[in-house]
Length: 353
Image (cartoon, rainbow, N blue to C red; front, top):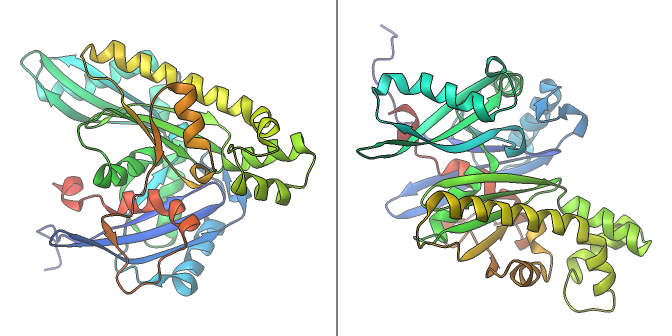
C-alpha cells in the first residue's frame, strides 16, 4: 500500500527569484542553534522574467539546475521549497471583520478585498491569515497575487521536480529573518533596498502594511552616472565608496539621488500616518531597519535619520545563524541572501498543520 497516511516533517529550503538572479539557502535547527547547510546564487537572462511573471520557465530552470549541480556551497537536502514573489506585484492589507462563523470568513475576505484591489478577483489568488481574535471580531492579514504570476512559478518549479510548500512576498520573508535577530516589541519600519525597487513594511509583531518604490541599487548607480557624467562602473565605485557621506561630490550625489530618496521618504511618511490612524495607541514607530544590497551605501542610514527624524540603522541578520564549516559569503554578498534565509526559516508545520 503506497498511500501516504501521515505527514512526514521534511525540511524546506528558500528559493528567492530576483529580477535577474536566483538565491537559495537551507537552514536547519538543532536545539537553539540555526545552521546554514547550503547556499548559492546564479544569474539568468532578464528576458526570462517580465513584470513578475516567469515568461521563460525553461531558461530559468536551466540556470537553477546548473546552480545545484556546480555552484552550491554545501548541500540542499530537500526538494520542498519556499519561493519568493515580488511584493510590488501583490496586494497586502490588514483588515478587520466582525464576529462570524469561521466558515464564512473566506467569503467575507473576498468581499472586503474587492473594495481595495483594482483587479478582478477572478484573476487573483486570495489568501488570508487570522492574526488576532477578540470578542468583537477578527483581524486578518490578507494577501492577493495574480494567477498568471503564481502559475508561472508553479510551472518553473515543476520543471525542476520541486514541491512548492509556500509562496511568500520578499518583504515578508525578509522580516522573518530580521525579527529573528533584531525586533522585540518595537514598532519598526523595514526597508529592503533591492536592485530595481525598494520594498517597505511596518512590523509590529506582524506585518501591518507594505509598500514599494520603483528604483533600487541599480537606479542609484544610473542616477550618479548621469549626474556626474561618468561610466556606470565609475558611478558604482563612487556609490559604494563615498555614497552620501561627506565628500567633494556629496552635494552632487545627493542631488542625483533626490528623486528616488524623495519618493522613498514620501512613502514612509504615508505608511507612518496609516499606522498612527489605525492603531490609535501610544505606541509609535521608533526605528527604521534597512537591509538588502543597496543598504550598504555609506551615509544612507544617517540621511534617512535626518530626513525622517526616526533612528535608522542597517541590520546584521546573521547574528543568530551559523555557517558551520562552510565558507561564508563576503560581507557585501551576505545581504543578497536575506530573503532566501527568511524563506528557509519557515516552520513546515505551520504550512501543513
